[in-house]
Image (tube, rainbow, N blue to C red; front, side, top):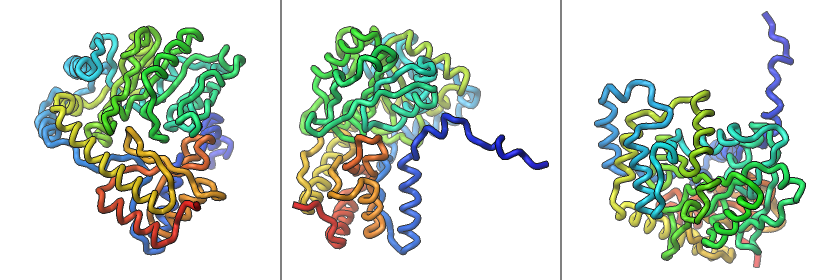
Length: 397
């Protein structure tokens, strides 16, 4: 039996999605390796450090518990929710009701995507900075909503100006996504910016969504602000966090959302119709992670700060003029003109095997930049810089 070809046509919403940068990098990497190059992958922000030993040991113990082999609860284990609430109280002096204001997720990306399904109808507008972590935009596309993109510009230190949102778009807006410390630009936001954003959301009746994935990876004494530290933020805001970066648990797929109980309840309703909770043994291990001493985070910060310094110094030796990022695991740098960001990254991979991510992969306003992920030891980062020197890849004076 032959299936009619029209039945194989994808849904219209998929045709609206731009290519994912990761998939493009895989093609370029394969071509470089076919030409005999050994690649240094500084493209994907996937932590290279092992999960802490105590967390692994708790996982081994928990996986042998038969109660963890059953379907996990949608809302997660009460003990995990309490551990998240205690972690927020300890880190940000924010009080959370673990039964109503905490929702564990199968990675924060899952929740960020599904939140749009909970609140966005066709024709509704979602305000998102550009460039951004792709799921901040693509959840809205999949939900049938319309994006209002607010550019992040170097002259504003990559902070969005909400005054640029057109009144016609603002009238239809339901949600506002933002993310500081920022992926991909590594920009940070002062507390006053969060206060202004909360007031903008209140004035325009918006649900405020803050992605705080990189809060612990902050350097030189800088302390990122949690949205929920701002008075009134919990009235309309939620914040997403992840175990991936701080605790090197990217492959475990474990994160959480906290904040406004009504918003989390609607996200929970979407979850109940699309998946279950996190594997119980992973939740037990995550409780151990959240209980690790502060020294774990301090050691991780020191490691990424050394890597940042190596990469920034290396790029400066090649002609780039950069400020050292105060947070995240990234360096955001301009592309040598007149190349596009994709053409520059493709050329670097083809000639050196060093993989960066083109800024255009994070949105149109990312054009002209590339992102370096600090996911390799210092000697490997130095090798990457050496390859760029050997290939005479420089930023023109």
